Image (cartoon, rainbow, N blue to C red; front, side, top):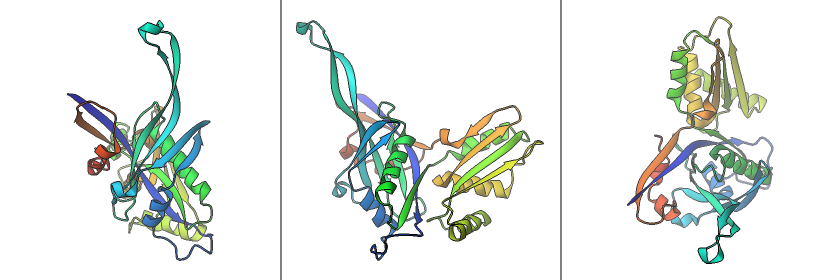
Length: 280
């Protein structure tokens, strides 16, 4: 029996209320309604000069989530049969990855799981390209969609511990609040930037030649906000060591037995949605 190990990188969708929108789109849809609509349509987009296609699955297959595939055309060099002398031949085909979206509004909602397959493309690039295509196609609707990786928080604290007193630069890039009901000072400040300055993203950079103190309430608030999938973290130490949260994507890994076809199918994955959307 073959065991199939599929990995899914995890991301968070943030829906920011657009200040200027189409007056005819009244009343505004809920965030869940909007996600179901825009991810329920076929789309074509380009990323690094490669054309990708997004095809949604029938929403009735699993009504509580959205499922679909992002794919691209691929050509592989093969050989013909022995009777044909193993002649070199080119086979034109397609390769696609599965994405699963929880569109619901709750503390761990609006999460996206993207199957990892380097032959198709980097998971972060695929979901970013799809979200950009959605925003470009809907310039006057109620929301702007932002996507950010859900971060492995432990990786940052390990870096901070190993470089205690040596971190000279710490940068946070946040998506302004959209659904998380945080009541800490940072959430309130970001919410104010969103409401007053119409900021979609806010960057905070801390620097100290002597070394920053990272074991503070403020830093913990910032890290906790970012790891939800609402921001990015970068750090640099005196010795030149770097930390980049975009390289520490939280993920889920499935290790399931399969009899014959080892490729993931939407039917099989639909029964594993809870595990796909959970963090390792």
